[in-house]
Structure formats: structure tokens, C-alpha cells
Amino acid sequence: MTTEVSERPAPSAAGGGPAPSMVTGLRSWTIFSIGLGTVAACTIGMFLPLVPEAIGVLGCVMMLALIFLRMPVALAMMIPSLLGLYALRGTMLVESTMATMPYGETATWSLSVIPMFVLMGLLLWKAGLTDSIYSAAQRWLGWVPGGLAVGTNLAGAGLASVSGSSVGMTYTLARIGIPEMLKAGYDKRMAIGAVIVAGLPGQLIPPSIMLVIYAGIAEVPVGPQLMAGVGPGVLVAVMFTIMIVAMAIMRPAWSGADTRLAVRSETTWPDRFRSLLPIWPLPVLVALIIWGTLSGTFTATESGASAALLSLLITLWWRRKDGPFRAVADAAVATISSVGAIFFMLIGVEMLSRMMVLTGITNGFSEWVESMDLNRTTFLLMMLVVYIVLGTFLEPLPMLVLTVPILIPTLENLEISLLWFGVFAVFMGELAVVSPPVGILSFIIYSIVKDPEVNGGQRITLGDVFVAAAWFLPMAIIVSLLLIFFPEIATTIPDLTSG
Image (tube, rainbow, N blue to C red; front, side, top):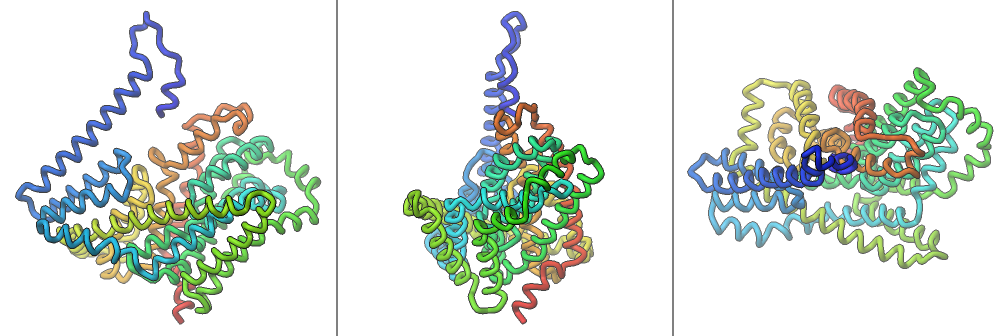
């Protein structure tokens, strides 16, 4: 929104109005002041003679205020947690927490899979797999109704699953896919929408960093949790593909119908099969992880280590004439930075969970749900609405951090599988980065489409981006309902693994 204001011409002196930069600055200072005032009020309130539950609520409010003030999520969790622990039990508990929790929470075998997956994704990114995946999808699917959008959707699923970052995948795919679809005559909202939802299945299909983080928060086995995402990830990709094809058939003008025959005539079968050669690492790596974990041959960490080693060899070979060791070094440094941030966040999660347990919020919420006599389906439908609302102003990690520790006792009482709920929560968290007004992917795409090389001379507003997201959100809600009413979509493969 700031960009839109700054692009308007400044009013003349005769108009007497303030300059846009002054208005924007005043608005920013107002928001900052409100956030800072909220933090101060919560801090003071924690040390008043309140019941423990009130201290827990103030801690959650302070965490949200700190996140809105752009403080790193880990610190935004740690600060109110430590203040709450001090207010509840004094200095000794804070000292013991700081002394033992960081090591105890991160030095676990189950979390050792995180650096393996992060390194694998960054190595393949440096090897240049992204362009090859999109090119193959375009050659194979460009001729069907909405083919370029379908190819973009499936390419995004593959890229997000490998890179572990929906944001990074969206940035790359928007630069490549949107110009191609606009050139082919696609409606701008159709092109943008296909890119926005392309990463949604990627955080469910292994390797998924978000599912690993959830496993750390909920303390469930990493391997079965990764397997639980396979079925839902495929379902999401298939459902969005069906939607895109249906939209293209009902509104041919939205999908560049006049260009499909040209694409079919220009692309030969040898071209299609040649396009598969550069992307063979992706299906091989995903198959290695799934097969190794499903068969019991590898643990999740061993599967990740094998995939990282294969990715290293691929990067060294593919970049052998273009600085291979530089690419590996860059990937290693980025891995250390990313893993450090993830582990730092997990420490904050554990501190927040401990504070919530001491305040009685988790047990209180569970008792409240029991008093309402909700069954599994009713409770999950309620949580679907709650997550959609939270997604309008929170990103995935804060959503998981804020809700999962509170919900675990309730999930156990209602006999809801923690593995299944991990898939549900991660998918709803991914919707958070799409949903306005905070959806970060919408703003990233808006910043990209302002480039003339991307928009091809078309005017694309932030409203167009939000409309494009709104077109596809109903299908995401349908997928969520399917997961609720048919939990076997997520639990069948983990059950086979355990069997």
C-alpha cells in the first residue's frame, strides 16, 4: 500500500494537502506507537496480581504485537515467554530454562533432518533446476486448456517441495511464468492466480521443512509426519489442476485459447522427452526419500543425508564449468543461516509452550472444548474458520507456534491424529501467505508485476492480485473439507509405514 501512495503525484501548494511521504510516515509512526504501547501495557500487566491465565493471554498479545513490529519470530516468542515465566515462578525458573532448554530442544536426532533438507534444496537451486522444471512442464502441458497455468502449478509444486520455501519459489516462478502466460494471451488474474497457489502443495510433499518444524513442535516422529503429507500434497495439486482446466474450458479467453494450437504444433515429442533429462534429480530425490522412509531402509535423517549427498554430486557436475565450489559454498552458508534461524525459533516455541502450560491456558482450552461437547468434525470445522481468520494477519510459523501447543491436549481428547493435524495446520498456514491483507505472496507478486519486463505493458494493480488470490481460495477450502471428512487421505501412508 505504501508503494501505491508514493506513486501518486504530490499535491500542489495551492491544494494545501500534506505530501504523500508525510502521510505515509505519520501512518507508520502511528502503527509503531500503538504496537509499542501494547508491548509496554502487556509487560506492566504481567507483574500485576492477576490470575495465571491472564498472564498467558498478555504474553500471547505481546508476542503478536512484537511480530507486527517486525521483530524476528523467535525473539517475539522468547521475550514474553521469559517475562511470563519470571512473573509466575521467579528468577530460578528463568535461569534453568535459559541454561538447559536451548541445547535440549535442538540437540535431538529427529531434528537433524532439517539441515539435510535445507542443504539439498539450496544445492539444487544453485544447480539451476528451477528453469528446467518450468520448461518441462510448459512443453508437456502447454497444449491443454489452461496448459501454461497447469504447467506453472505443477512446476511450483515441484520447486516448493525441493526448495522448502514457498516465497523463494514464488519469486522465481513469477519472473518466469507470468510473462509467458501474458504473452500467450492469458488473463492477468488467471496468470497471477496460477503462480500464487503453485506453492501450496509443495509444503506437503516431502521434503517439507514446515512438516519437520511441526513435528518438532508437536513432538511426533519426523518420518511418519513427512509421509502424511504425500497424499494431501498430490490431492492439492490435482484439485488446482482440475480447477484451472475447468476455468479455461468455461472461459477460453482467459487462457489464451488461440495459442494452444500453435504450442501443439511447435512442440514435438522428442522435444518433450528431452525436456525431462535436466529434471531427473527431482523425481529421483523425492522417490528416494519416500521409498527409504516407507520401506524402513532409511530413517528420515538418513534419507535426507542421502538426498543431500546426491544433490551435492549433481551440483558439482552441472556447475563444473561455472564455479561449482562457489555454488556449494554459497549453499552451505545459506544452510547454516537458515537452520540457525529455524532452531532459534524452535527454542522460542518451547519457551512459549512452557509458559502456556504453567498459566493453564492449554488445559483451560481443552476443558472449554469438552464443555461445549464438540465432536471431531465440529471442532475441526471451527478450527478451519479460526485458521482462515488468523491467516489474514499471521504467517505460517506464528500460526503454528500460537495454536499447536494450546491444541495438543484437545486433539488427544478428541482422538484426532497429531500426524493428520500437522498436514491440516501446515496447509492452512500456507493459505496464510496467500490471504489478504497480510498475505506476503500477494505483495511479492505485486512488486514483481510492476516490472515492465514482467507485465508486458499491462497495468496490474494490487487489487488484481487480491482478486486472483480470491479466485483460487474456494478450492483450497474444498481441499481442507476433504481432509476433514476423509482423514485417510493423510493417514493411510503413515499407517502402512508403521505396519
